Length: 390
Ligand SMILES: *Cc1c(COP(=O)(O)O)cnc(C)c1O
Image (tube, rainbow, N blue to C red; front, side, top):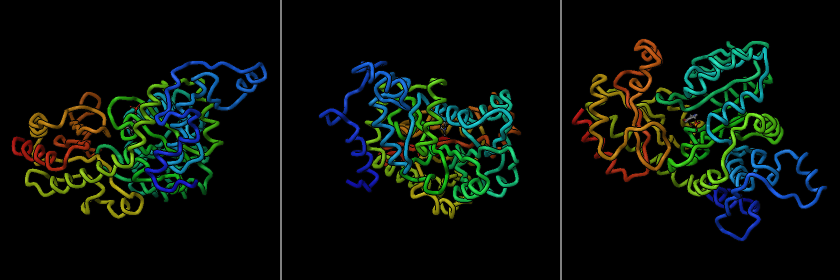
């Protein structure tokens, strides 16, 4: 049967990879598998991505998860990893070698930035960082040795966008591979492979997991590219546990409905905050005031559950605002069922000077909000009383 709808795929793609009668497939909580014969063993030992040989190579629980995520992203194949950084490091390292050059956007997840800026140069790989809001900047940074363009959209915490079709077109014309970190948007809101991007990576710790109870990652691409990444992965070893794979498969069943609700809550909260006299600005791609709102409407079908707000005030106002919240927790991470806030200026002050933060567009009163699945009215009430106290 041809499964078309997002939720239908999320629920039924794995059916044909579940060899049991159980509706919720069992967890293959095993590190190794028995071969049926010596011929069978030889076959397994020479297979690419065997599902019943050794769990670092593959696992039937992971196979169901991989087939489902691949279908949701519109890719041929996927590979799950033990964390989002595992997916990012494994995919990047598997594609590059000494002497290669990477073009990446300036604004990236901190771990990715560290990898590109501090780790890869040790292996003879250079990276140029560009402001991603203008696609022409990517073209200018390309060298004859450029092998990879790495993007992430929307960015955290300012929710700035990268034009995926423009970047994909540029990369294809120069035969450069493109990777996107699609963690914030999720395949519910954005399908980068349809825009021509080659590889999608996710931290499944965030929306795909959605319950703040698992750390994981996934890479989605063509069969050929995933095979290449897998050959690196079995050496790099960022392996997901079968139990965590099972939790992620359980989470995928509701991804579409959860993200719809995150989208709705975040838009309602963004509108409320934008109209509040104690708020200077709200960074959310779904608002007409977002400088790239037109692009957001073109390449996203929803605007995610993440936003940030600049208070009319200073560092202390942000601190008072956060400590006055009753429902919403002060915690890192995002994409879970519960709403969370962080204060980027406080989080990064150890590594970055006030000037560096300012040049990144991070003001001292900026607060990032991961909008959860609570009732909209209760969330707005909590933020309203915290603004009064700020
Ligand atoms: C959290 C996050 C990561 C890293 O994922 P882990 O699962 O924590 O390793 C990478 N990219 C983005 C956008 C993230 O939010």
